[in-house]
Amino acid sequence: MKAGRPFHILTKPVGPICNLDCKYCFYLEKEKMYPGENSWRMSDAVMEKYVRDYIHSQPVTEINFAWQGGEPTLLGVEFFRKAVALQKKFADGKTISNALQTNGTLLDDEWCGFLAANKFLVGLSVDGPAELHDKYRVDKRQQPTFDKVMRGLEFLKKHKVYFNTLTVVNRANSQQPLEVYRFLKSIGSEFLQFIPLVERTAAGETNLDFAEPPLLVRSGVSAERRILFFGLVSGTLPRCRYGHALERRGGAVWEFSLRDF
Ligand code: SF4
Image (tube, rainbow, N blue to C red; front, top):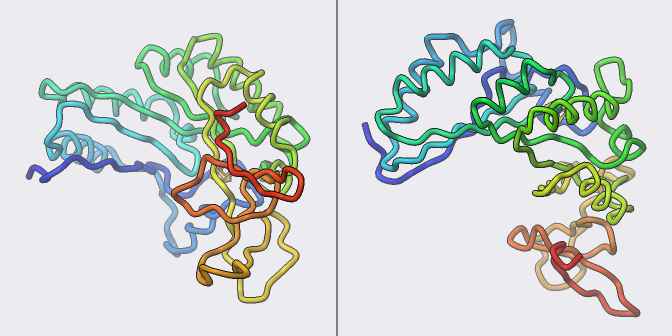
């Protein structure tokens, strides 16, 4: 059946399974929603039906598949070869594109050769230079991951895979915004994405490690959370203003776009 309008789905073919243990990860715990489940890999049958229906149900000629996790590279290259083969089988004249979000630690020649050949757009998760990235992005042994991510990045560059970066703005890197920005530019990222880390907290909880504790705005919009975005100064930015930042100049607070740099 065709949908009345286009839609986009984030595909999580390995559920919440990941080889890392980022301290702020909200998604690993989703494993507990399926007690007793021990197979998280999307089955061949489900993949075939999903690929076919996702393409056929859209009333447009350009279809984008976005693969996420957990860590989707845990599935191995062969899984994605099958996905691309199915996309071709069911394309029905439509143009298909793919995006894959990864922590980058498992990328190698085989992966990046495949990603380049099939024109995947890769989102690489990196939170800044080593001392900031490794603050929260650790593996299952709580060891730093920065070096492995940079090794993955070199494979992406070697094979000329088109990539961008995704940075979680947290309590550590929010204090050094220009260092983060310059680092991301220095590694060749031409499209920088930022996600503010916003904690879910019990009322009155303080001393959070990852993000500025949400506080009620002192006056005006009482239900709105106070967000420290990119850390130049504490302030309030509604969701529609994400991508902007606040800076204190003299006694005044100014809002500006990161494009101003
Ligand atoms: S790489 Fe992503 S999914 Fe894996 S632990 Fe880190 S934040 Fe969670």
